[in-house]
Image 1 (spheres, rainbow, N blue to C red):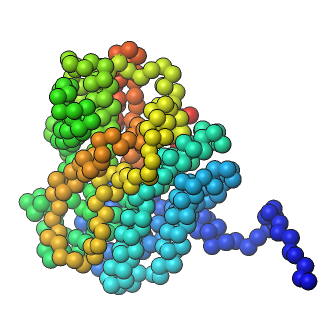
Image 2: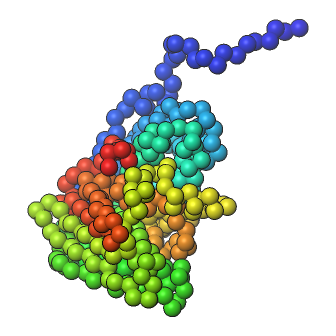
Image 3: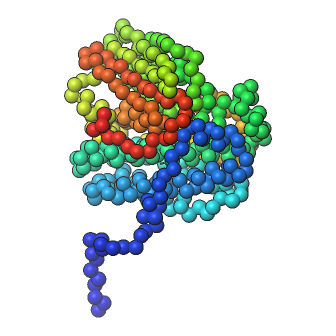
Length: 421
Ligand code: COI
């Protein structure tokens, strides 16, 4: 009878470098909004292929780093079904993307865009899965470790989706019948205020107003049509334009307003005081302050404000979810097309309104994962901005959002934890 081989569960002290190890050794190459814009404005075959090959190498590199982070989790956390689902998704994306050979022709690039779009769709369940998984493993691992992990997973996810979507959008624009020569594309009369996903003329007041309208509608659905909603008073500079990805700003402002609406309506009922939004401009930043009189944050919830793994609101909401929703965290997530191919006919022109508010209005009014605030801070910091909340206990909250308006800062790929708050 053949002898049974014993299986060692202790890894040998030496082992040949795995494929993953080799990718983990590569550094990610961060990029700024300005670089993305200039690159996209002067599109030629060579530049488009350059962009394709940047994305081809960058996506598996960035995913490999996160897979390695997940591998350091305690066993109890990694076998959690939600965390495991995300791990498998990442591994399969890594395997698919790392095998894409160098992109040498526009046809290769079209095929690559099909793969990327499929990945973008497959990963729509990542955020709700993570939110639920983290809650379930929060007893197995320390909450600061948990928060650090989620922070880096989400930040990296934003970064991958930005470069992937930007490349797909540029490819689509390049294939469009009225693709204009670079000089013409710079002219605002042509409606080319978009370069891929980047809107060159973001206006804070316009975005706040649209978010306020959308959140007001969501509040009506949640509380009933007779609810008395607070007025949103917007003051300050209304003529500041800056390059930004609108869905990122909409996510943050939408979440801040949603918190303010909820707190104000629930505290004041029939006579809700206004929510005041002040917009001001500094040399390098646009600052947006959202002030409400919703009673502020309870002292006991304050330490967990930025935590993904703790907080009563999260627990209450997530434990009641029976199915994992396919939550689009941003509008970009929502608009990943189902079947479109990059060389499909398209008029090539985008307007601000093609991009408006799907992320907020597309969701069920009560589909909240309770991670809006920490997620908003990740979005704010991603393009070198910041988000702070000042609590006036018993009175209300002042949230300060700072946006870098020059577009010259690299994406922020490193993480911070709730402990740094
Ligand atoms: C994600 O959404 O998490 C991704 O990594 C998408 C990317 C593979 C295109």
